[in-house]
Image (cartoon, rainbow, N blue to C red; front, side):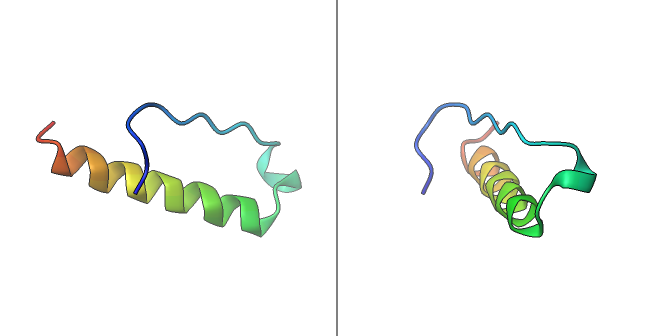
Length: 41
């Protein structure tokens, strides 16, 4: 569970971005989407 508040991700352009970083950002985005749906927003 992510704590309430914002998350900021700063990473290099796609051609320099490791697959692990992209996967982590995708997980964070999915978690935020689920959290925002659950809050009634």
